[in-house]
Amino acid sequence: MTDSVKLAKLTAPVKPRFSKLRASQRRFAYTVLIVPMVVLLTFIIVPTILAGYYSFTNFNMINSPVFAGLDNYRELFADPIFIHALRNTTVYMFGCVILQVAAGLGLGMIVTRDWLKGKTFFRTTYFLPVVLSMVAVSIVFQWVFDSRVGLVNLFLKYVGLPAQPWLLTHVLAWLTCS
Image 1 (cartoon, one colour):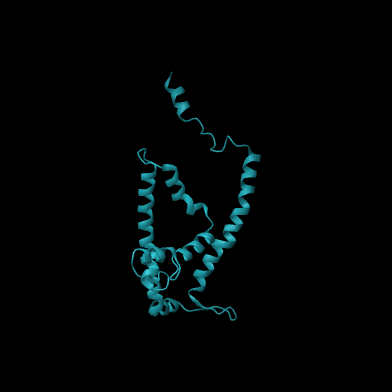
Image 2 (tube, helix red, strand yellow):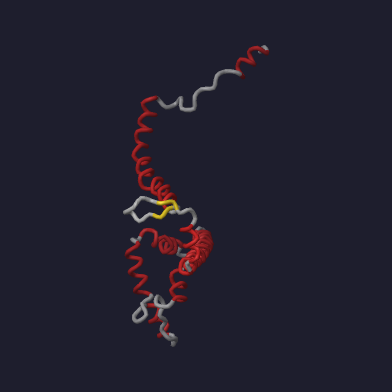
């Protein structure tokens, strides 16, 4: 081939990216995406932007918002209850994320091993909370950790240990919910 033919092949126009889709298919795809985008804008994006705007104002939903600058944030971070709640949330978030990722990864690796006997049972047990309703799980959780008749306390009494108020004290509630 000559140099001019090679150059012509190199500089040939690039086909559009969506050339495989017809215009009617593209219109259909955009039309189908309109509803989720409207829902996303209505319930996520616009409320988030408004919450950010209102956080810099004094607004009581009766009078017009008055710009307050960073006064709301100064007041918020001066409140000891907020600082305590923020600390609890941060500790809980990091503890749960790290422990759950590590436990999930470890259990996932164990359940996929060939040497594990009863693999189906463990897989079912492992994925059971995912498929159960959250309401049912919370009812069973409260029953298991009930301070008077819970299964955990019945087991503790059986082995000679005192019953514990699992969901009634700060420290034990943290341990059971984590």
